[in-house]
Figure 1 (cartoon, one colour):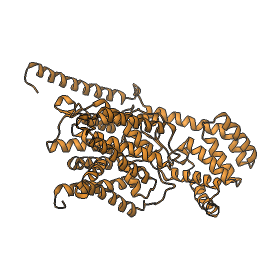
Figure 2: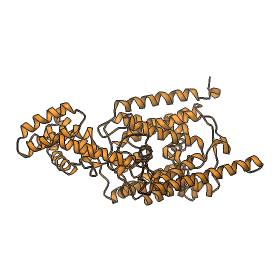
Figure 3: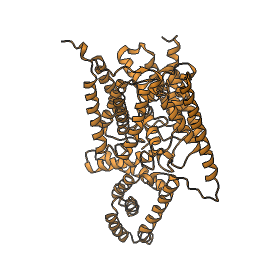
Figure 4: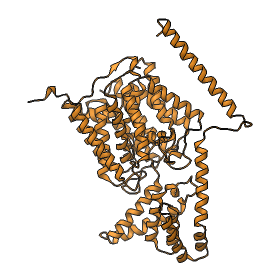
Length: 356
Length: 182
């Protein structure tokens, strides 16, 4: 395995994700949030006016880079393929609930491991939750839960999300008056935009080439153990983030006083559990959905649209947690998310192969 | 993609639309850049900034008398006035922050922690360096002192529920001061 090009590509992507995840926070992004897809989406949704939290409004260039880097790579290597039509509305809702899960935990699966690598022990509940969620999703897949296969063809509209993100990049550069940018709060903390955009684009290109995905790595490890490359990418990610946190003096082990963290362990577990479960059903974590949307996958594009709606609602409806803990709306959103996922599993289950 | 006349017509319509869009945007940019016509451009950020500044001014005006009482050494009177203001404006964090400051100065540190927590929960601007309302350095110093003091008390009486709650509140302030995305 160590001689394969795929192995080293995944390891390099993992290491780069971990290194840039820490360094982007050093360069200006919020603490432990150098890379966080859900935070970036909540910030960007705010910048577009989808919520009114004045501390969470900034069109994150990293996010634009992820999608546009993936598109550039897919076009360059002739892998851009417009496809879609696999239960689109359900995917949109799964995108919404995936962001609710992240908002309750305070971070996406990438940030989960960045928090852990910075010594935030409250993230352990999230790790266990994510493992549980992926395991539950896999159980479902093994028992016949399967979304319909997408259809290929330009009619799927796979070019629309890359076009939208290109437009957002123009907005970011031109800064029309309807865009909102926080002057205080966590969204006012950002790395220099050129560095952020280059970092995002580089990761977008490499993630498209390697198909790296946090939940996908865990899923594949459950299925095939340590024989697959993906888990080594995940380990490289966590290891590099840990080393960089130590080197940059950002490793503060403990449960208390951690940045952007709360002590409601049960809800951290459930939040990440929901994200893990949904990720297995729709084929990838929030980061992977962005990369797939960039490759022309319209189904992933609808998940991305759902994530933006979720980002707006998480802030507008008070679903997002704070250091003070999880709000009642956050708890209700998570439970509704589980109702939605379980009922989706019932609906999308192929029962042809049930053992009688 | 351009096999018959209809395809070609569509391509022409697409190019015309794109060209028109570019012309409209260019003309609009040159008009709004001309100060003689005045900028009618939607600028939500500026509107919000002005509203925020106005709010800060209003807060300073509302709580000015309390601040005067505090600086003149009339702290119990200042607390009474603050309680009245907190009842009138229960969602406004500034009263809790001032109360925390006065209680701290009076040596009631436990109550001060609770008051700061109430204030920061209502409005995180008080621990934000970039906000004109920021009291970050004052709160940071206080939390650093309290971490040692409450930690020592908790070590001496680990089963004491009220100290555990106080420690939890102090940890909340530590977490907010540590930053993060929320």
